[in-house]
Structures are given as structure tokens and as C-alpha cells.
Length: 69
Image: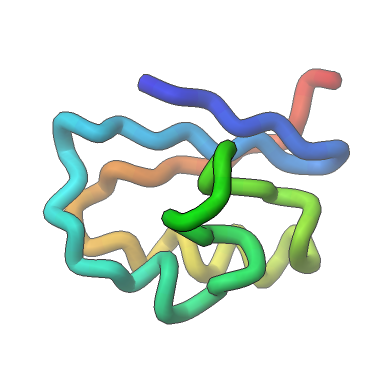
């Protein structure tokens, strides 16, 4: 499990579950950019938009929660 911490949200990514459907990258490319390291930056969009896009992940590889930082 990989955790990407933002100011408001943390996005967790489980590469073992990922089906590589690309919903995250196509739906919110400012947050999910596979050409960047780290490839997930939760601060690049509104928290509600990030939550909505994570909810569309078909494999369940992405989860989101409020940031602890």
C-alpha cells in the first residue's frame, strides 16, 4: 500500500489491486499523473473532486481519507 499525503486528504494506492483501467488518470489528470513522481498529488484538486474520482476506481485500488498531517 502506498500513501500519498496532501494537506486535506490522503490517497492510498494498492498496486496489487490495480486493474490499470486508467479511470483516475483520465478523470483527474492534475492529481493522477503517471509521468510524475510521486504520481498522485491530492493537493492538485478540490477535496470533493478527489473523493469523487477515487470512488470511480473500478478495482478498489484507490481509497481516500482525511489527512492526518
